[in-house]
Amino acid sequence: MARKFFVGGNFKMNGTISSVTEIVDNLNKAQLDSNVETVIAPPALYLLLVREHAKKEIGVAARTSMTSPTAPSPARSRSST
Image (tube, rainbow, N blue to C red; front, top):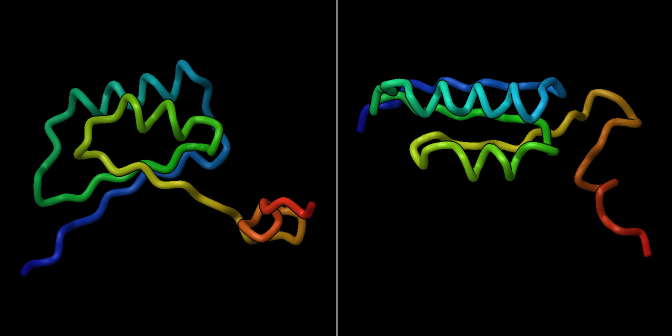
């Protein structure tokens, strides 16, 4: 099986509901090549919004930043109680 091309977009921590919705709407209207995996990674705040509005052919990824000791991480997101 041939490998698929991969195109990903990472929003970092940028965007508003309006701007994120506009990006998703533009992707939904685009003719995406079926041989290319398209994935977007919005800020965590917008994950549900993007997943609910993006076509099923568009992947939605969550991201984490492990570049500093104070950055969010899966270990720090667990309840300590």
